[in-house]
Image (cartoon, rainbow, N blue to C red; front, side):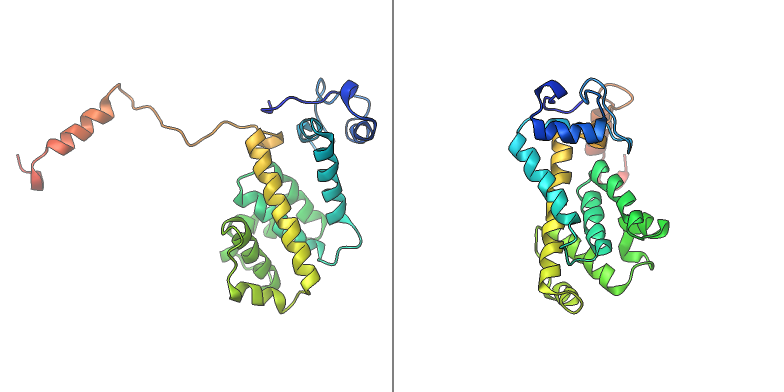
Amino acid sequence: MPRLKQVPRSEAPADILKIYDMLFGDRDPVAEPGTETGTPGNWWTVFAIVPDVFRHAVAGFQLYRSSKRKIDPKLRELGQTRAGYLRGSQFVFSQHCKAMRSVGFDDACVEAIPGWETADCFGPLERAVLAYTDALVLGGGRVSDATFARLKASLSDEEILELTYITCTYDLHATMARALRLEYDDVDERIVEIPSPGAGASVDVMRGVDDAPEGGQG
């Protein structure tokens, strides 16, 4: 379950209720979760806790899908999908793998996102976008001059700004989905200590190593 409460139909403002209707029909998404795409749908019900945040986020979706955008949707989706993968969000990554296919990428390119550096299905500009995304998400915006020059050689300033804004927005969404355990990111932490077979076994083994004479001679 998400870490925050959810807003049922009965408590949703009128404008948010219209989106509930579009996504869930006449069901209460809290009592009967699930969307047509297979997601639980709790991103919507949790964000609705603060209607202004919900509206701001939805406006962001409308912005990146607008016909006014100059950035090629294929390049945009590369940034969004790679950002989801790098941030470790199963939700953002999975959803945008599907979106990559919808804008023309084949399965080979979608499957190559985790290891794009050694894939040969991406062209020079696509590789530059992926390198730029890595610098935005992993490097916190520390982009090399060489990477930026590759972008500038093919994209306008307007396209680069749109790409940067959209990619960083999806870094944010991926981070929030994990932190709040939304949708496919409602998973337990997998990096934990694995208990030893016997109580105290690891301590005894290490004590034996520490006590051994140098060179391994008794």
